[in-house]
Image (cartoon, rainbow, N blue to C red; front, side):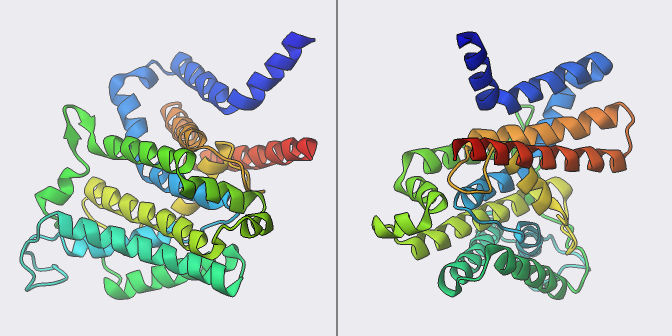
Length: 325
């Protein structure tokens, strides 16, 4: 009986990690190329962009919110950042702008992401409109502004410094290093600071959080601003990897990032979630896509399986919370 209880606890706590390991074993058996160093680095490199976004979304969903705008914010922030990091060319957006040091387009991308996130948080905190509606509005507005800003054209011909963000250092892709650094920062913020403690408090019971003295409006703005900040960082990584940014870039990335967070065990009921879970959830999606591609599955069938995994993850989460209740 005791062993059955232990197995059940282990499955509940480490279920998604067990699934990830099982997927890796199956794909490694079916395709020897899966475990090659180059393919593993490719998986991690592909994970970096929506993985960074998923880390920000973990804070939002733990606080019992949602952010549908991160993909559009990525496109807008990426366009602005890229436009400030162009070499002289006929299609340069700002013809008279001299070549700027990398820090300026990086700060611009981060600032736009954080500002869009803060606007989301302010709308939710001060007008009390649902997060779904507020961020849906920002998703549409940010995409529209991106189209106007770029005249619906891609921004390319980036400086070597910007392109270097998507290159390698000592054989390891720089996006992976950035992803792991942001993972560590997010882990500390969520688990070791008052910011993280209050994020859990707001998601667990917003009324109780207010009664206990938490400035809910302030923290909601901060939570969404951090999510937007990471969308801005993802935009810089995207620009460096791709070498250009299109106003339609990252369409659907918000759903992938939400899926990664959900699969990783962050509850949409609020108050439950881990940064490690978001990392593993993002890896599950990347491993699934990579393995199915190696085995010759079409992208359409991958979408079907991804959707089924998301639905199953939410059902499991709801049943788990029902039992706790």
